[in-house]
Length: 203
Ligand code: GAR
Image 1 (cartoon, helix red, strand yellow):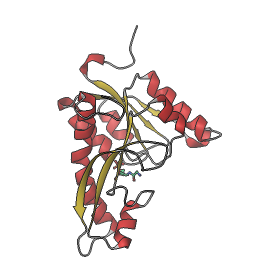
Image 2: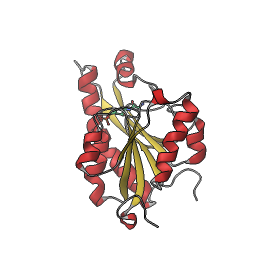
Image 3: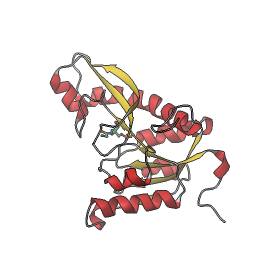
């Protein structure tokens, strides 16, 4: 049987889902040679600028458009079909700005992870950097967590804190948060792929 990715023994096959510029995808690809995972497909819900990273690294891309689907279930099922077609063992959300229907969690239980730019459970949702600034807290950060049905509520795998400095703007603060994301996310995905970080439900 011909497999859809080139070196199946070279690492745990993962799918990365993006919507935007894909800087986390870029870092995952950069760190891949020294990691236990292989990005075998990049999936977006739109023509994401981050596809450039996939093209640079010769990784296949797929677009599953929200507007081509009648509802969240059918959109999610199409994404899951693509993930399955590439035999992915882990699903890595990296700035993917759509909420997946529960069917994704049923099909890939404890196998979907997300990076979120706050110290969850503080500031879940779509504007965590703005919300932290507006709240006037001293620090915020990055959380890597397992995706469950409730948004931004899954078991936490790793966190890094980032201080909020006088004069911070959303752009400045998000830039410092992203520096931490770029360091942390590939390490967590590597540890999951290598079996060093136990996924929920495993002994
Ligand atoms: C990242 O900062 C990520 O934490 C955030 O989107 C950005 C994507 O950046 N994700 C969320 O807010 C999810 N709720 P990137 O496209 O450059 O990787």
